[in-house]
Image (tube, rainbow, N blue to C red; front, side, top):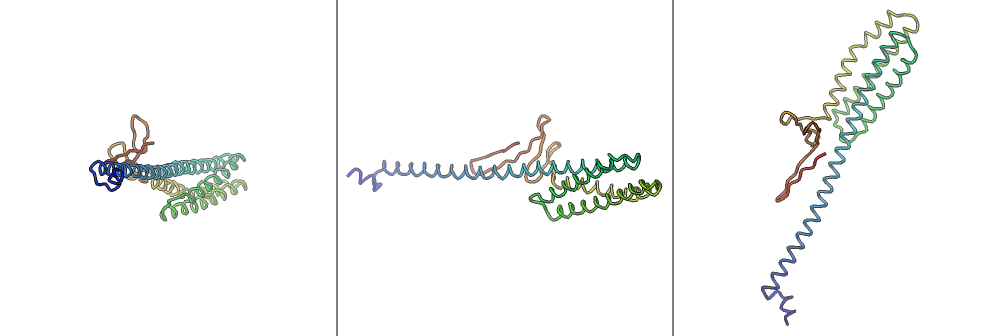
Length: 212
């Protein structure tokens, strides 16, 4: 009879125990759902940070390769050493490879894809002009080589501006205070001379702040 009364929730004690058990069950389910949600969010953040790091490295690789390529071209026109021409070609291949890798990245907007394509075209046109200048030098036509190189110098300014613009698109966007910024859904700040990437979140009764 006591067992039947308990199952029928006819006593205060049975109702309290059933209510407490239900509450515990709901808390366990909520905890599991919260853990899964936080895990999924952490995975998304990790992926975003990985993409930021990848694009930063590719941007630096692109900028360095172009700088080395232009410097090698200038050196070759000055002194005609074969190693400078080889350095010019190698740096050019590296720059175009960096552009291809950037183009294959995730989350690029149509504006960014268009800018990458424009940079690739500008770099190719600049390389053609500098290669022609090198060939003119090889033929002993120094004045013509210098004139051809000078004719493509304005492209270097445009190219450098567009490369810098591409980097800015994928970097910090909104200033927050004197040392912080917001970019790609993450806050970028400096604490004790250390760069910190972080983002917080809130739900009822819960707050988190993930930092890298």
